[in-house]
Image (cartoon, rainbow over the protein chains, first blue to last red):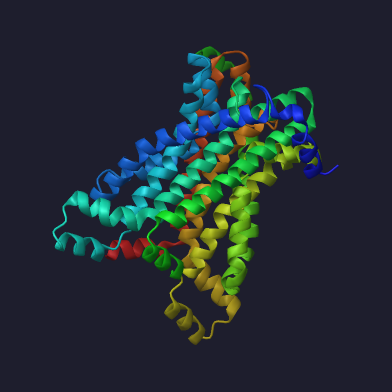
Length: 225
Length: 214
């Protein structure tokens, strides 16, 4: 039987759609972990990236720490925090946030840094203060790259939140790990396919956001390049 | 942290480290082998680039655990179950860098090479690929480091590598192996990254000369 057929059989069972073990409840848990983790990571990485890109101070630190953070094994961090402090929302969020900060930080920093020096000079020549240059000129021009960083982070979070289930927490990963434990292949495929669908959906949402918030002038210039 | 436990398990660490290197580096090599010709094709026929890019970014969006599990049914508990998904990830990072790298070759350079009598193949090997090297290696660094981190997820379904220290430590509520696993994974990633930087220096000596002259 094909993977698609298995998946369709699995999601069409009414039992999957109700109760605390059902798809809506698991999906809500998964989204909750993901959204909180992305929000915290963005709250840390966006201002830092903007400030470092604008002033150029601390750039060395950003590039190197981001590379080191990319190497950090998420699963190891998760089981370590759970082993040390026990179960809860925090142990799930720590590795997800650690995973999401580097792409947001690096893309924001790179985006601001790559803004045309002439543009910056023109804005200063018009009498804008440093803060105005950053928020009104540099940030909008850097927006495509900043959004790319957020999108990369969001997709990695959605995919990785799956492992929360390994330590006995909820989310869509539950289907995968419960299925593996019971040798119930249908459930494994169902869970994996739902996570994949959610990741693709995240990609689409960010593509739409990009279309609506990036200024048309910048969009055309980026397309022409 | 139990240092006596660490001391008495050095053989195990060496074995897991070797597995980890094999499972994470092989996909980078495959990814490079596939993305070079694919990237060349995308530069020559720009019309195929957007669909190729879309396909690879959708594949990148698939969670690794999902891919491992899908493949488990076809390939079983074999290295291929880890190597195939990681090759796909490598590909989706690298293809972009190969195309960007080849496109970064200045047109006058290309014309100069042609004027000197270089054929297409020789121009590619002796002029275009060397100029593209730094951008391609930047992609290799990202792919290598994230593969090294991702392989550990494979241990959840029993594929081996340093991730086994995580599952082992978690099942016994014993932090020491987990810490050892994290430290070794990061050390391996930093080492691999450093080797790639070194490789880039060796392959592109002119970038250093230019910087020194400037």
